[in-house]
Length: 153
Image (cartoon, rainbow, N blue to C red; front, side, top):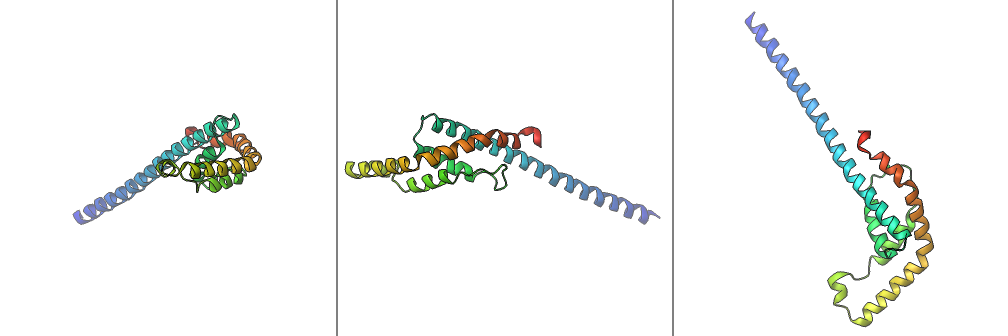
């Protein structure tokens, strides 16, 4: 009889431990989803600021597209609604090869000037498409912000 009680107690402990483990995993996943949503909210907020600055002419399109391209790559692939921002990625890729920072400072004045002219030419050629893509991005920012809202969790 005592063995049955011990066996029942052990079975109860095992079931309790299993349920506790499941609850712990569920809570850990929920916390990770919240952290990820917070990161995505920050990314979308940064995209909002950068895209507004670009549309208002407060920042060079090459610098803005490099930053926006990186931020866009941080969002989940299934973000909805989808928006065509290929022009942003294209300009970012085209100007991404130019020297920056210390490497740029080490260039001769002639080489720096050549790179500046090439960058300005690319910006001018792609300006209309980049601004159109940026306006499309601005059209979905509020929806993306709502998707990553803390209330949705």
